[in-house]
Amino acid sequence: MRRSTMIRAVTGALLGIGLMLTTTTPAAASPSRFSVAYVHAGGAGATAVEVTGKFTWYNASVGLEDITFHLAPNHCGKFTFTGYARTVVDEFRSVSLCSGGTARNVSGGTVVLDAQGVRGGITRVQVVVTDSTHDGVADDIYRR
Image (cartoon, rainbow, N blue to C red; front, side, top):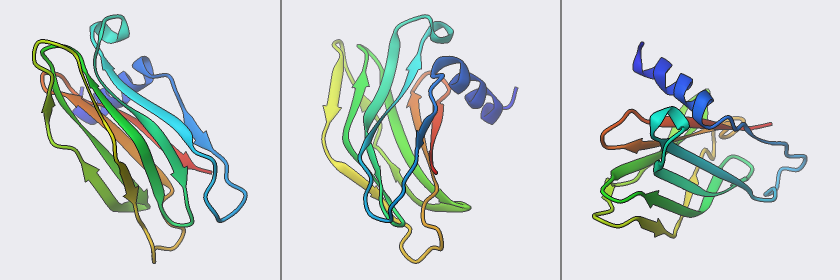
């Protein structure tokens, strides 16, 4: 199975969440929550790594805030936020983080994916979380 197919299959099996948001005005909409996790044993085991936070759609951009990255004991991982407007227009990649012998939560910061000047702005954000010893898990957030 190709990796991209595997990520999609694992995403559907593990997450089962579809983050949809409808906006009716061009201004900022109320924030919604997101959570993407890699879970051992095909979704039946312990969570290895997880990224959570809130997202808010703006005219042409999206803000991701209150970001927390959880790592289980003895795990390393990273996460990526990619904004699309037909093609990739902006991306944020975390550095690889490790927990050591105890669980670790790394919190803080806001990421803004910006598509000013791009017709229609960002319409999709892909959130990918990767455990250093396993394939990544992805979920998409769509503007509607």
